Image 1 (cartoon, helix red, strand yellow):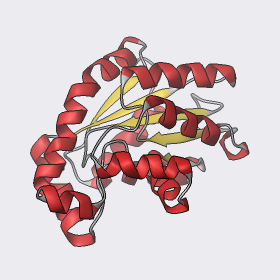
Image 2: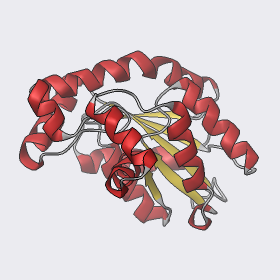
Image 3: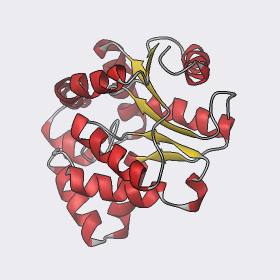
Length: 214
């Protein structure tokens, strides 16, 4: 923990290709906290073949949003586990102001709150280039299971670049109110995500250690 926090419940926000997962993993290692990636959680559910997993797979295949109810229930179960007692690094949730309100309610039930929100601000062209290259190289399914489709699904309907730009449209539609809600509460710290991963990482560490409301 930093000198500012006895615990650290942190949210990483950012558009597709902003490097949230990379920075979340680094923070998790630095502070020895669990990295909670909703993308990875959704992929794991799909692999189980459970009823929930089938619902997720169907929504992802059609490129639709996973419902707030499903996402929030999944996140609540995860943050209530013993390894989160000192905090967590939340990557991929919330994506909307409605989800942010649900997260606050869930944490309040546990006697907790969000201490810091770090926004990785990335130009669309930079994000598109990063993700298009990653998808082409590894067949990845996208920035986040919240609104991604399996590689095979979007390959049939659109190019990787087209799909990434669709993800950006969803981000642009949902993020302004979400970002402003955290800014009004004095929790938001913005980082230029167009820099190299190393430089972004240094800026993120500074953001996490800065006084609330800085």
